[in-house]
Image (cartoon, rainbow, N blue to C red; front, side, top):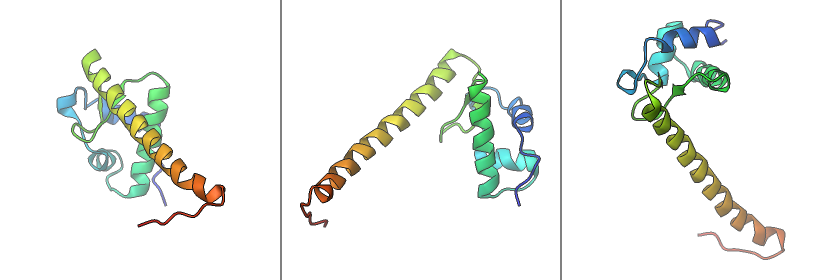
Length: 114
């Protein structure tokens, strides 16, 4: 059962202690800070709260190198935006590659996968 303590407000309150890239925190550590324990379900709840905060215009940044943090300045925000754009581009490239694989099967051609 997931913890009801993982809310938008709890995440925002915890992130207030992590302003600036140098104060970033991993998802696991942030979950432990908020609910006192960690599991993948809690981390999923955290990501949902982060999405909500971003949708509301809160500058929540995250990347593997720095972890989650509130942007201290425009440069940090831009770094986070670029990280997300790079992820989008990687996903789009993977989709195109998979579409190429799927098309021969749809047209009746066979393909040997090695």
